[in-house]
Length: 283
Image (cartoon, rainbow, N blue to C red; front, side, top):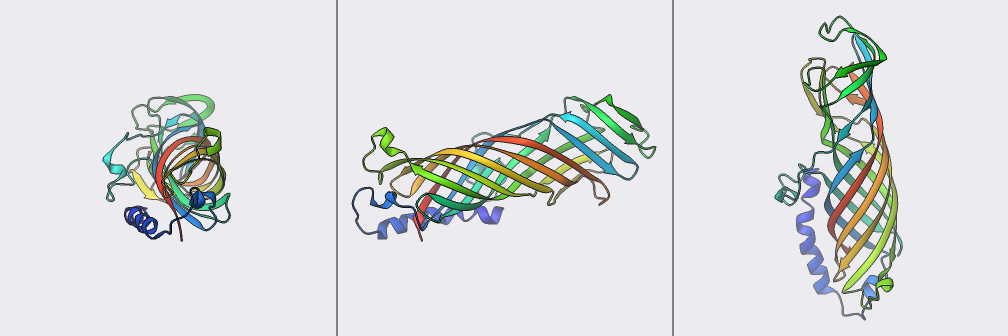
């Protein structure tokens, strides 16, 4: 991800060069058509997650925590968004796309979200924890509860991160006329809607039943999403894009310890608020 994000640095130089070489055209000519253009953007997000049931299974245990609450891990506005060595630390969004015609584009990207189980909660539990874990051993009936506050039973988060690697198919429409904008080569407003699908490649930070902490990347499942947004383009090549994006994530193969026999699964919905900066240019 860090190598990919470094592509953003020379991009603005390339866009400026293209702009300088472009022939003089009538107002709105460049922004009137999108076919054949490429775009790239980078930004940040905040997330919300639904409650989820998390199933843990391994040697001598098989249990489910019900209605687990979780949130994101925001960093706020920070220089790390622009620091190539630290660009994956905040919650970020990267997208690279191509317009197949004037209204439709296809893009690939990564939504680097962060999912943190709320430690200060008491969760319902159902299942069995064997005698290999005497501190927590027992048969739980689903109405039993367990206090997760001290982290001895479980700490669980996808913080480097909840990586949604996906492809999007989107439509873009110029709505500048609604705001009486004449020359869209100077300023243009677009509305965009899209759908996406891809894989989840989280780095899950977990400590379960007193075992050694595990923190590693692993392909864990899939996701689908839909979005709507506004795009504000300045001087033909530069834009700010805001999006509201929701989706569904199903992770059926989450690694929780260094043993391959220890796994977790969960599914939940998410909602992102995104703001990004980028550029668009002909190739």
